[in-house]
Length: 407
Image 1 (tube, rainbow, N blue to C red):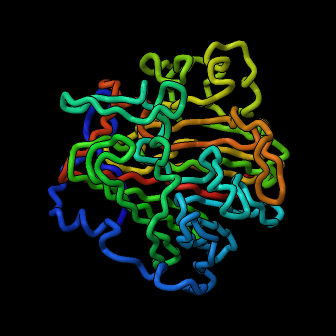
Image 2 (cartoon, rainbow, N blue to C red; image 1 turned 135 degrees about the horizontal axis):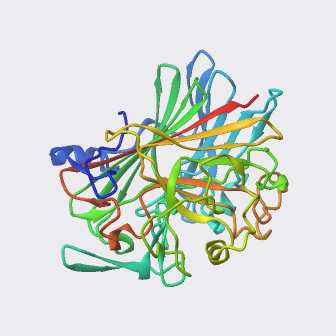
């Protein structure tokens, strides 16, 4: 599965879903009705190995009803290691080397399952059925109104009260040339969180020996619905969240962004960047302008906005969306995606109330997010790229996190 999103012309020359006329039996094969995968057949550690590239499964605790939760550890031949639990598809740890070769964990999260169950700001999770916000927690589709949970002030955020980040996904492991794959499967039933249609979702995490972590999303429905899937890791490339992220040098390959209102819903169309604090066309430290006297920074308490990515082709191609570089460690993160937008969030709501891995307090701006996505509130804004998924269509999307050292 290539996991590339299929495009056609729109007012932004970006995404639309493409009708592939797949038979309904394929839709069923993505669902939990297909039975447990090999990763769920027992609770012993298992390893698939090719040279130094491995994937292992261990226990990660249990849900309140006693259902077991697994933790998968993917390691490539260079020692990059990512740990992912099938609860929420959460990336709990991502260890990459610095310029001296020392490994460091560059994502925020917890050492065990209970803090994830207790509630957290989507650390490392798969977000859906609709990532980001929907205004007033409602939308209209084909003349019918759909009411969603208002879990972020008046708005609907990241799929609602029990979104994909709080679901136990079915898991399978596999091996490809120079890579290991964790495939996660989820069925979201018709009416869940207010959304129409039975939605079957597959998310593939692929760790490759070329130091890339790729996320492929696929979704099918039996009724018209809306969907916008993303990943929500909080990055801190220093490997020590106590250092904060203001010194990271960020570049976003976009000529415009979406201003928001007081509830963080896009309030206008794209605003062209012109050297203001939202202009990341050239790399600059995150902290350079974050306290500038700008109404949008005051509304969000920092950056929490969607940038409209430049498209250099009309096809379903991966394109470079953003880079982040930590001068302290030398680590460089590249974000590639097929999506039309990227939400840059500067950890504005982290306030020191959460204690993460290694007993580390997650203070203000301890991590940042780069969420590849369709635009916020797209179901209510017809000029935005299409997020409607119909029966017989396939939603495909891909994002790649590429790791290296900047000399």
